[in-house]
Length: 119
Image 1 (cartoon, helix red, strand yellow):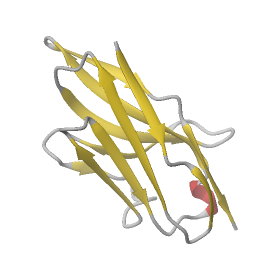
Image 2 (cartoon, rainbow, N blue to C red; image 1 turned 90 degrees about the horizontal axis):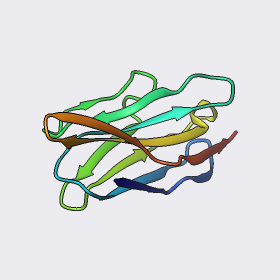
Image 3 (tube, helix red, strand yellow; image 1 turned 180 degrees about the vertical axis):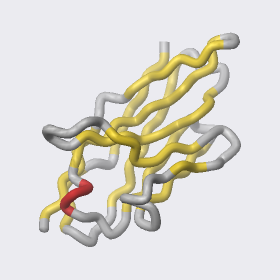
C-alpha cells in the first residue's frame, strides 16, 4: 500500500504564493508520474500540473507561468510552487502519484489540501 501526505495549503491574498508538498511512502519500487489536480466547488477536478519520471512537465495554460512543479525522487516527494495566485485558483488540491507494480501502474490520491485565495 502507498500513503500520500500533503501539506502547504492555506489562505493567501491574491498575488501571493503557496508551496504544496506531497510525500509518498509505503511499498514503492518505482514512481512514474506525479501530479497535482484541483477541484473547486461545483466544478470537475482538473489538472494543475504533472511531472513525469524524466522531469518533463505538463502545465495547463490557465496556470502556466505562475505554477511550477518539481519532484525529489530520493524523497518520493512532489512540490507545487504557486505564485501570483488568483481567486480562481482557490480549490482543493489533490496529489496524484502513479506507482509501478510489476508491469502495471497504480494511481494513488492524497486526501486533498485546501487553497483559499482572498481578493
